[in-house]
Image 1 (cartoon, rainbow, N blue to C red):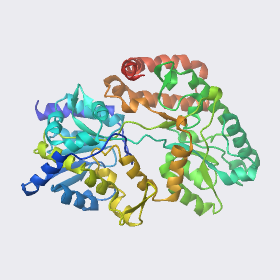
Image 2: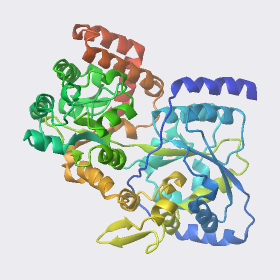
Image 3: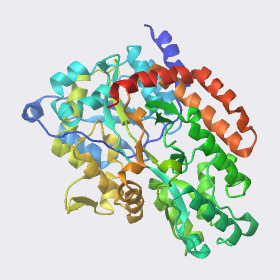
Image 4: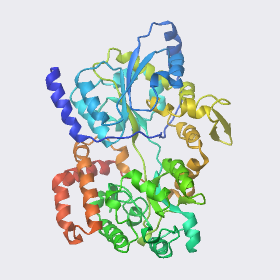
Length: 514
């Protein structure tokens, strides 16, 4: 296939994608380093090794001067030139680089549905190296660190073209509330939908924020009207949820109508921000941190930033996540992540595919991996009672972005190592711990499609269908669309790829259900 034709084909993949952002996660499995890998590493110390080129996701610091790069060069023997994808529309740049056969030896992208789709597209078009034979020959650490189930989930048409970095399965977003407002209105933290409504009414009527008619009991952002925790109380924590043994999109679940009715009622009563439809993420957070809003959905990773902003304007302000809300029939749940945080593939244009696998394998040496992920004991962290605690500020300075160097993880040990990252700030750890340790395990509902293999219909249609549902939900809550038109919208959803995706998803789900 000539370059011009490949460029046209590659650019068509752009329509399947949207901008993805990086995260800080890991996974589960079994770890260890084989004797063979140690011998291979030792014997290769004296061999001349080529310089490799690696394309990475965006980060704020230069990879080449970040301390982890020097460590990996010392431990693996490979000097690497690191380049970055742009922060804005990284998939567009990636398509151009792959289409022009830029000779990268490794390319790491985020692992969300957008990039899983573009990765599979590259594999099907013959742009990627089949890693199976190379891993069999040069990757004992890869095999011992990453479970076979994880590797299988990354296969396209039965072949492995990427090394996946698994995501830690945890809840990321909850409902953050002003505890000092609760104290002022004399109420306890809500645990049910009815209690939540009562609290929001008190926020409106008793004006604990001192904002008068500008007081906002609850605000959200316009591009995410399916609110974490509240949606779970209607059995809708994820886009697809198990309904009578079938993975069913929210909009086709009877709970969707009940959810929309609940949110619409909040809006009509003035309990939900009347401007939520035009709120961006920053706008929503500013309304909360400035003291105008009493509750917002918030990712635990944003807690320190929002808490600092709140402290500046509201010195006595206090905030914390509310518990997992219970709906009727005991329904509840926060969405819990699953699947891939990153995927790393080797383009066919690579000049050194064998060395690229040897390099990745060396990074997964048990001791090297730990040094890369969290540093040296006594210098970067302390270890006591089974917990890794970072030593600041050196941990932040030298390991804060170490996760961006990962290409597969020690799945057995990384979930424990990773907690050092969240202990950098007591407020960060407290927020993460509340959602993922203090809340009962059954409150976390794993997104089953996170662990699914590539599915062409689902991947092709997901972004469009998700946007359709979000836009429609906003219109319903605002009253711009009547709820009586739901059935007609559901038919439109099915015709736009919902039916094809549903069949494909459930054909797979039938093979993994117990």
